[in-house]
Amino acid sequence: MELVAAADSDERGLSLLKVVNVLQKVVVFVHTFTVDKLRSQLTRTASEEMPHMSEDIIEAKVREICQELVLSPEVLKEVCDCLQEEINKGLAKDSHPEATVKCFPTYVRELPNGKEEGRFLALDLGGTNFRVLLIEFSSKCRMDSKIYAVPQPIMVGPGDGLFDHIAECLASFIKERNLGNELLPLGFTFSFPCKQEGLTKARLAQWTKGFKCEGVEGRDVVELLKQAIARRGDVQIKICAVLNDTTGTLMSCAWKNRNCRIGLIVGTGTNACYMEKLEKVELWDEVIDDPPQDGDTHIEVSGVVINTEWGAFGDNGCLDFVRTEYDNNIDSESVNPGKQLYEKMISGMYMGEIARQVLVRLVSEGLLFGGFASDILLEKGSFFTKYISEIESDKSGDFNNCRAILEELGFNDATDADCANVRHVCECVSRRAANLTAAGVSVLLNRIGEESVTVAVDGSVYRFHPHFHNLMVEQISQLVKPGIKFDLMLSEDGSGRGAALVAAVASRCAAMR
Image 1 (cartoon, rainbow, N blue to C red):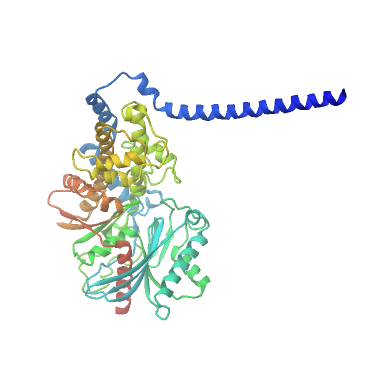
Image 2: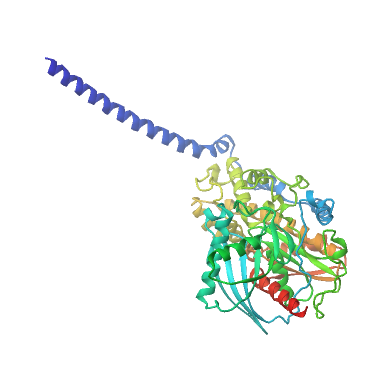
């Protein structure tokens, strides 16, 4: 009897265990189903509560929501006035420590004269990839280059790890080209905010563009690179200059165009440099009437290239009157909250995410895709900045690129009205970026005050957006002082060739001393 009872007990226990397992599977299924259902209904609710709207009404509401991204002439004039004030603070000794637009002197006193000759190395670090280049100047410019990746762990790891990685790639490049027996001058483009203390000395002010390497801020990046090269002991390099990519962009175009006075980057980040009169640079710690370094120079006034680091414009709150909830969201979720606020409204690192947030809002209000959002669209960073350029490349009334992109995002049944509204969002985001950039360039043109000035421009946003150039020209024309003529010149590999040109000019000047 006891054995039978025990068997019955075991059988009941097994049955109970099976029931528990079944119930657990049901709970998991119901939970998963409920979460997925809730996720899809988050953006459906608003549209279900909203009565049916015609396409005209929807279009009007979309434009009303996007209106906060449209900057009036009065607002842009106020932006110009604010930037002018911030640049003055950056150039002044007393206010420089607290200034957000730092305006660092680059110690580049002379632009190319077109007579530079010889072979030079260039190192270009400014994003998730970096390049090593071998450049030869004669009557023409010949370049050989290789791109190397900066893995994410290195971008946020120890500083020594970053510079060891750079030194390893640099050594590999030299060995592959059998350059070990030559001591070639190198120009180092380091496209992050730096306080320059000489042509070959620059201290990192702060990391940007997703970098967060420990132990680098406040230190001389040239010295860190030299130490990394010395740790290897297998190559010899003569670093002649460290510069920002904006300075390289200016130098590259100035090699061909004698009117070039401004360098501008609109890509992953944004920055600008310009030639400023020495008497306006209180930070200048050398002889103010130091003559130009070459008798053939075309600079008519004693000046120095100023690296504005204008990406930080607005970090003190002076641009709050143009910032939106989308800008605030992007800033709060970034790796550097409260920093580079001007850049976060302009650059390619953030434009796509601004557009995505607007699109999600429109969906939630039942104004796009029938109020249904795809899981992909709800993911941060899923709407790439390149989508904006591709969508705006469609001809009027043609939505081929737009439809292809929307299908990638999980929308297979988008209507023409949906596509038109998506395009309008993209246009508002890119026009705002172009107008804010134009406001900055106008301030620099007005400061220089010369009759005719060429602006050297580089960066993926400027290069690949189909209308960015025209939008900038249109807005600069309205903001610049009467009588000033300007043109925007696409830089040919400014951060690479420009770095070599700074090294070339420095070498030429050193030989003349």
